[in-house]
Structure formats: C-alpha cells, structure tokens
Amino acid sequence: MSKSANDLPILTNDERLKLQELLCTLAPLIDDLTEEATGQCLPFILLTWDGNGTFHASNVDKDFASQVMRMQLDRWSKQQDVLPTIARQH
Image 1: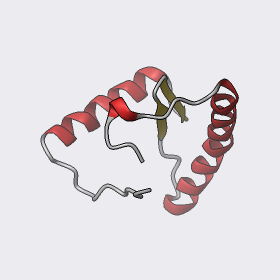
Image 2: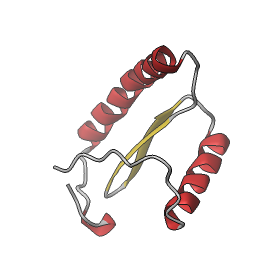
Image 3: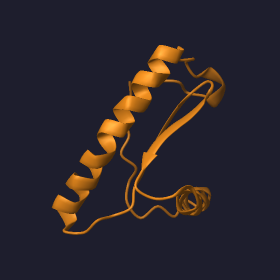
C-alpha cells in the first residue's frame, strides 16, 4: 500500500472501469449489510483512489457526502474519532 498520496498507482482505463463496476456491485451489498446489522438504512460513502483521482459509491447525494467527509476530516484533525479506524495493511 502507498504511504504517500504522491506515491499512488495509476490505473489503466480498463482497471478504472472494472473498479467502478465493483463499487457499483458493492453499494447495494453495503446497504443490505448495514441495515441487517442495525435494523436501519444508514448513509454510507465508499471511497478509494489512484494517482489520477477518486472513485466512490454511496447511497447519498454528493452534497451530503461532501458535508460528512468535511466533518470526518475535522474530527481527524482534532483526533476526535470515537471508534478506532479499521485499516488493513498490505
């Protein structure tokens, strides 16, 4: 896994299309699994990126997603995360 935003892989167009298709497949699964776990439909944003840009899937519009991402960035900058971040190292 890259340690720096300046050291990200560059995906080919075919890889980018496959990744976007994968995210579109994952989105309804995330919806179903979060509702199964909590009994509620929860908003989510799944975000990944390569050296050329970001890819995302969500069940909210871009304005809402942007607002939530800004709130999370603010929490990270103040080290106010309540739950630990789940990260898998490659």
